[in-house]
Length: 343
Image (cartoon, rainbow, N blue to C red; front, side):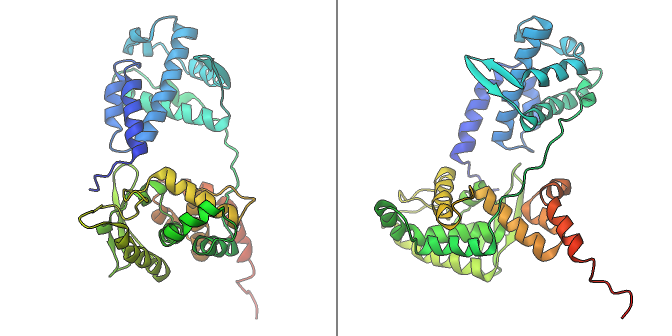
């Protein structure tokens, strides 16, 4: 398995270790139990949400310190207490700062609570799972932001020959344009996540079979395939990459920074932002939006939601359906006249 740990993951794990110490003791075993199936950032978000939840319970419902929360206390928690918590986090203050949660923030907090209670109930630590009685806040689906085909072409053209960069950016582009074009082409041609992109090592790419190996969220490895267009961009970069090193230097990472070290997630986010503002100034494009662009193109080409789910690495096809539901309607409308009942 690829042992690479991104700077962001390392920071998340460090914050998580500190935050767990402020939670009830039984949370330690819970976080160990989900370690193999969740990313460090997901666990950190869960810990943050559970910290807010337990502080609410102790200050507003139980009137005890967090240290005194044990299984006997949890058995007293009712679904109404959790509903009161979801109402509380709409607008609340902690440590002198104000916070607001809409439907998505509340849904995430409920997911964290449900995950913990499900674990405790499954392992017979509590008598019943009151969190399962709480309705999930209704989520209004946001429209998918993606690049149109002409915008994709413009984006790649801008990375190769930018039209309107500052003098300093132009100087950097002359050095990095082959690398940047390869990164953008890889996003648009395979739909990988930014963490998967920066985690790639040279040995993970097989040019004989137009394939590469990535480590998905949760640690599972999978093989993805790429087109000849992606292959060409990657080979251009691999050939260019050799000249970035001095004699005796080496780095496993496929994509490197000007410091000849593995490129960071933040650096990739910045280069995507830089070129996408030239290609589509009215859209806020991130690496994830390039992933959405690929998913959209793949779904429009195949009409097969299961293929899209498999390639994008969605564990639940319903996640894919949720994101591409509007296009499903377009496809259904487009085929109504395909079937002729009479010549």
